[in-house]
Structure formats: C-alpha cells, structure tokens
Amino acid sequence: MLGSFWLDLLVSYSRPYPQPTPGGGISPDGTRWIACRPGFFLPVRVLSRQFRDLFLDQLRAAFADGELRCSGALAGLADPAAFAARLDAAAQIDWVVYSKPPFAGPEQVLGYLGRYTHRVALANSRLVGLDDGQVSFTWKDYRQDSKTKVMTLPADEFICRFLQHTVPDGFHRIRHIGFLANRHRTAKLAICRDLLAVPPSPSPPGPEPPRRWQDRLRDLTGQDIEVCPGCGGQMLPHGTLRPCPPPRPPMWCDSS
Image 1 (cartoon, rainbow, N blue to C red):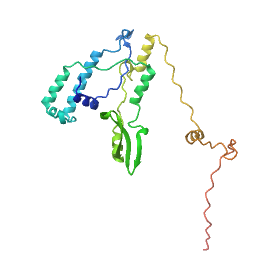
Image 2: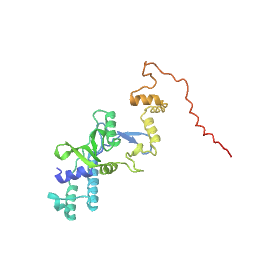
Image 3: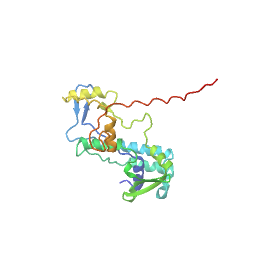
C-alpha cells in the first residue's frame, strides 16, 4: 500500500502514458521473427522493478533540487536523512505496475494515445469567459471527487501557464525505439513484413487538389456566392473586371 505521501508524489511526478508493445521482434542476425509465447504481454515483474527504481531516482533528484515541499504531517521528511530512509524502505517493497493488453483493438488504442499526444493543453469547451482581462475556465479538483470548478486568472498569467505546455524546439513528443526508430524504420519494417509474410502496406494517397476559394467560403459561412440571391439561379462568370485606370493629373496652365 502506498501512503498519502506516495500518492501525492505519484500524482505530481509520474505521468503514466500508455506505451504500445509489439508482440515480438527481429532476431539479432535479422533472419527470423521471434514471437512472444501465447498469452504473454510483457514481463510485469521486470517492468515493476524498473518503474520503482526510476521513480525513486526522480524523487531523489527532485528533493535535491528543492522541488519537493514536505509540510503538515510530512514535515519530518524535510530532513534529508529521514527522506533517504523513507526512500530506502520503499525500495525494498515489491511494486505493482498496472498493465494489460487492449480490449477493443488497435483502433481504440490509437485513439486513446492520440488524446495524450496530439491534444492541446486546454480544450475550447473548458473556456468559460473573458471579462476585463480575466480568463475563466473549468478544471477538476481530484481531491474532492473530481468536482468541476471554475478558475479565473489574469490574461497574462493564463497565457503564461498555457505556454508552459508548448513543446520547445527540437523536442520530440513521441519517440520510437527498436525496429520503429526513425533512422531505420523503413528498412526494419520491410524485414518484418518479409519474415511474417505480410504484404507491403499500401502507399498513402497523394495530396488532394487545391479547393476553390468559393467552395471554402461556402463551407465556412454557408453562403454560396455563385447563386443569385434574387432568383436562386446559378450565376456564371462572363469575364474579369479590369482595374480602373489611374486618374489623370489636372492640366497645368503655364502662362509664362
């Protein structure tokens, strides 16, 4: 059992994003496909130990950098010796990492992952209002049974917090490893398909032809400028209006 101390830190410093796991891999010599045994998903014991060690290492680093605040009933853990003793005790416990294969299929897994990797920090539906330079939005208080509340912040503070979720230049939100690594993914996937006797994937469709501005305007506004507002008939272009010539300068009368 994790006490309230660990639960608070788990919420603050752990981001348990789901990770898709293949059901096998290419042999080191690249001549055969090594599949996992039936009913096997991943080594849960090994995963649990690795997660425990990495999690505790992050806690030690956060404590050393002064990012952890121990107050109230946890004030005694502000002492480095007491904090180290608590981590050493936690390292002796067998942790359990919750993991299971997907129920519904790959489409649902991709949809679930997409909500983590491609969504913005704040959906438009959570915005309540903007009044006098104050932005109001809804949020869930998980300490009170996920009760929905409204928070109001100055506009500059709201923008500052929103930009903290912006991915910096050069940062990869999704990293692929193994035969899905970007450097050799094309070649490795071709080997996987050959070893598994799977036909090559179809080539992606080409880019769609550019749409006319009249069609885009109709989709955005619901108004068709090619339909006469009087009779409802189709209007046809007969030509392009030439620009008006620039006005002639006034005649200057020189009486000299």
